[in-house]
Length: 331
Image (cartoon, rainbow, N blue to C red; front, top):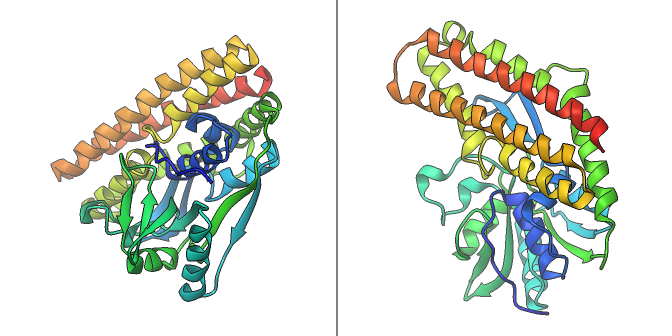
């Protein structure tokens, strides 16, 4: 089996999947993997908390991209979970001895190759283990510029981190990769599916309804929580949007890149137009992040700033409602 090649990516799961497929001979860009994998989404769950802060996510659940690459492209995956660390690490060593790179779900807090100020309790971080260096492991973390060495004890703890989205030692790799998958059919199905989920789910936590729900809640946070806690919650929303390997603007720029590739693949100008509009919407998400970060940094009780943030969120929701409604009929 040929040597594994590290490649920097924007997002951990799509970057890991793209790397594993590329190693098996199927060379897809990260935006295509993310888009066909149905990665784009939005949710805000005030009743699910991580570190005492409501869960906000700009993408679908962990492993959805893996599952959809199987369903849409016919990639067949082997996935292994374990009850405890010892058999999980033994199995990983066995895979690596045969020259097989392996995707791993980890808790980022325990990965000490990240600076301490970048580590927090999030258990959906995907990496590739591709070899050993003494007692430790050679790791391709897609969000880093180069491959790194991970201490064996750190990797063990990261694979069995506790809390929401606990990895349970998940290890995965493609067992079968089709030589010539039907990219056109997969792309059409993926776009329709994402558009429906963004605009059509009948609950107020998901898609554009979730964005509007967050706007309504956010502008009441100072009164409900007090200024210090309100700033902390805003900081979490911004961090999930910009710092968690999203490619910027909560994956909107990456999905726009996917739509641009899809427009060329399907020869559909409407997709290129949607890509431009979603990029412009991503700029407004960036405005939200900048203003939110300023609010947190200034450390002041400014209720007007929360109202401005809520206004930007509602604008983003309106724009995405229009874009994804068009996409449902574009393909």
